[in-house]
Length: 266
Image (cartoon, helix red, strand yellow):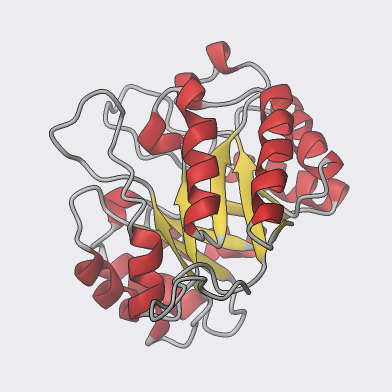
């Protein structure tokens, strides 16, 4: 890991020399859709694919996800392409179901302080130690975030990754305001790795590359990037999703920046 080049100031960048990318569509919509993205991810030599099976939508009439059918699609694609799978858990009643299908469980921003859900996820993953990617709430402080993480780890699973996904401010030019300072702050105050979700704060695909490059430079341990074969036809968050070709180009750029930082994309 790179040492600080500034005398007297410690380097608060990432924990290892490897940067993980969690990529995939906002929602799992079909076998064909998910397979196309999985093939792209596998072709780039990456390890993880993510997708939404249960979707927390602001409008109850919006697409809510395919549920267990989506979990089956994810599991099949993971086995077919040799990828690890990640999806969000929204309800305590679904924790065991989701854990039985995927390799990693995500806690979304809207469940940031759903303490019963956090405890249940901790219980379900206590023996398996499956990764739990815990997103910051869009109105939550870093102190609240770190404190609430104990609801998961106190149950026996310390395999937690904290995911910064933007906070709500007065600014409306972007969907959320990316708090890039969360990376060094979390590294200074804890031992947890930090993921940056660059799609949600951007809200627009043309802003995603710049945020992703900034996240690597800031020392993020991992990135979350949404990828869809046909974003204009996506059932959720189409404007912020990259096409597979755009994603391939971005990964190539990220590898260059990572190498300059003495790191590598895996």
